[in-house]
Length: 163
Ligand SMILES: Nc1nc2c(ncn2[C@@H]2O[C@H](COP(=O)(O)OP(=O)(O)OP(=O)(O)O)[C@@H](O)[C@H]2O)c(=O)[nH]1
Image (cartoon, rainbow, N blue to C red; front, side, top):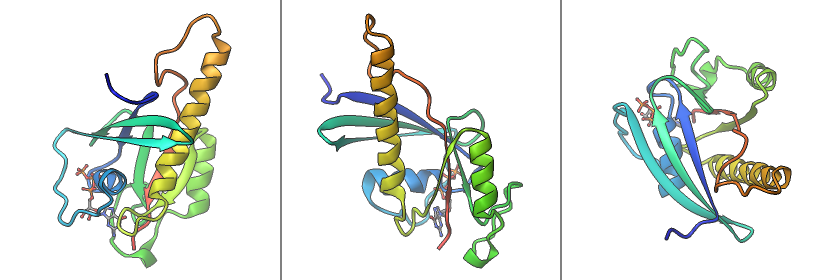
C-alpha cells in the first residue's frame, strides 16, 4: 500500500530541448543534469512531497510532442520555438506570455531549472491548487467519494528563464 493522500499525474509537453526533463529533475532530484540527453518518446518520474500534513505523490509523464495539461517553453525561444541560449536574446516577453496564459485560463510562472528559480514554487503551488480542486470536488459530490487525484485539470503554462 503506497503512502500518500493524493496522486496527481502531471503531463509536461513542449518542443524538444525546452527544458522539460531538467525542470522535473531539478524538483525530483535537486540537480541540474549536465548533458541531459534528449527524451525518446515519453519519460517518467515520480516524487512524493508533504504539504501541511498532506502527502502528495507526483507522477510525471514528459512527452516530447503533443497533447497537454502543462506546456513548457523557454524564454529565449519565440513562439516559433527558435532557441537562442542568451538571456538578453529573450524573445517571449513576460506580458505577452501572461496575456496568452490568461486568455487560456492558465497559470503562468517563469522558472529556471539551472538556477533552481521558482521550481519548488511551481510544483508546490500546483499541488496546493490540485488539492484545493480535489477537496472542492469532494464537497460538490458529497455522496460519491472521488478517487485520489480525481478532479478538475489544472493547466499551467511555464517557461524556463535562461541564465
Ligand atoms: N541555461 C539553462 N539551460 C537549461 C535550462 N533548462 C534546461 N536547459 C538546457 O536545455 C537543454 C534541454 O534540456 P532538457 O531538459 O533535456 O529539455 P527537454 O525539453 O526535456 O528535451 P527533450 O527530451 O528533447 O524533449 C539542455 O542542454 C539543458 O541543459 C535552464 O533553466 N537554463
